[in-house]
Every structure is written in structure tokens, then in C-alpha cells.
Image: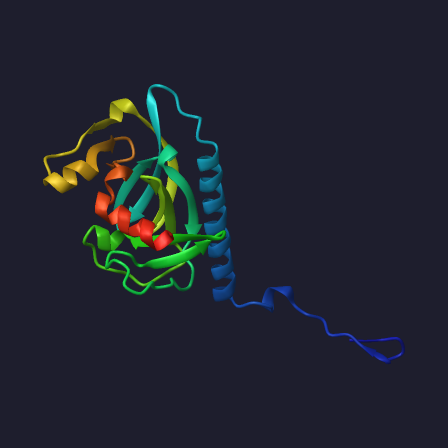
Length: 204
């Protein structure tokens, strides 16, 4: 339309036509993902909320399977960068390294570690950071679902597995109300002692 005796031309924009529906859906999905991550991180920071009858765990996913680790073992959760830096002559099990606030962090793909098929990088993936024998180490997971308080009564011994599996997954949370099985991981069993030594050389 024209204003000021026709000397000014003002274009009127329809807000609902600025962005396509696909872009709006993408923005909404990213926003929801960020909110979920912020809530999970906030819950990790507030890790003293469980009582003597329950365990507080961080639940992550690899495919359709759910795994839980004690919340006190999780240092932090960060996004997977666009690219990981590959260190020459680094161990085969190391996916690469990232600079995490001035510290070199070795990153391992949890899928490869468990013998699962690899997947393309996506926005849902996260790096879970643990302190393993004094060495901060990151593991890429498909997604971090939530921080959950699990009653001790719902946690039982895992089925008979191989020796390596039994060391890593000693217990299973059987959540009958939600029909979920959460395999409880022992973080200190994620790597062998010699593998941790190799990571220390990378971070040095």
C-alpha cells in the first residue's frame, strides 16, 4: 500500500506465509529437542533427589533398546559436533576427539562398542561423558531419553549372559507399568584397563 500522498510504498507481509510448513515443523522439532535436553541436563545437575528405596539413572537409547547408568557416574551430556578429529595412530575403538572447553576428550561410538550397526550422524545423538579411572571419556549414544528414579524393587539380576556381558550389564530394571526394560550398565566396565591407558596417552 502507499502512504504519504503516494510517496511511501509499504509492503504488507502475511506472517503465516513467511516460512513453509516443513521449515516450521523442523524449528518446532529442534525447539522440543532443546527443551528435552535442557530438562535432562538440569536433572543431572540436581542429582541428589533420590531416596534409599530408589536409584536415579540416566536413560539413553541405542536403537529400540534402553540402557541406564547411575546419575552420579555421568559427568555431563553434550551434542555431537559436525566432525570429530581423528588422531593418527589412535586405537581403533576411538572414533575421534573433540575439544571440550579446552580439554581433549576421546570419543567412542557406543554402537560400535556393542557390535551394533552404525547409523548416520543426526541431531538426536549425544555424547555422554564419564570419568573412567580418572580419564574423562565420551560415548556417542542414539539419544538421551530422561533421568528416571527407579525403585529398587523393580531392579533384578540380568539373565545369564556371556562373561563380558555379565560384567557390563549385571542388572535389569523391569518397569512393568510402562512395559519397559532398562538394562543397567556398569560404567567402570565400559573399557578395559589397557584401553583406558591408551586414552590417557591421547589426552596427554
